[in-house]
Length: 110
Image (cartoon, rainbow, N blue to C red; front, side, top):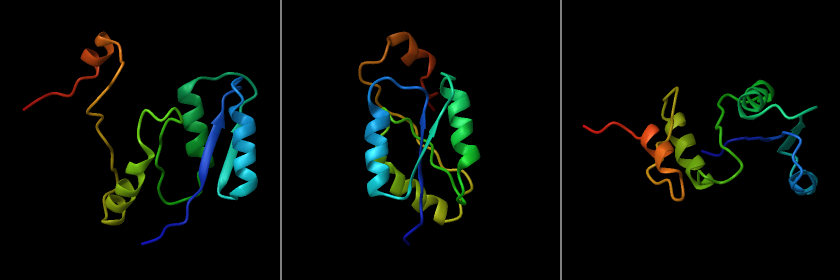
């Protein structure tokens, strides 16, 4: 079933030119919303700001650095449409991650 959506990007005072790219894309797609912070806040406050500004019935949170593939969004929405209140993913591969971080974030087996 098709869903209405909005894409909310939080610009945490980036200096890499991504804001100009987002603004250009927003001109092409009215579903894109951009929130620019007044100073650098970091991940958690930016995620909360995105949740606060979301207007839909469900939220899919994803970092913009593409560590998680956007292609899974369709699968997440499908599970939500089946009636699940919370749908999440588990990263099975962490290419290039620090071994200590991989150990800390490992999933229990069995």
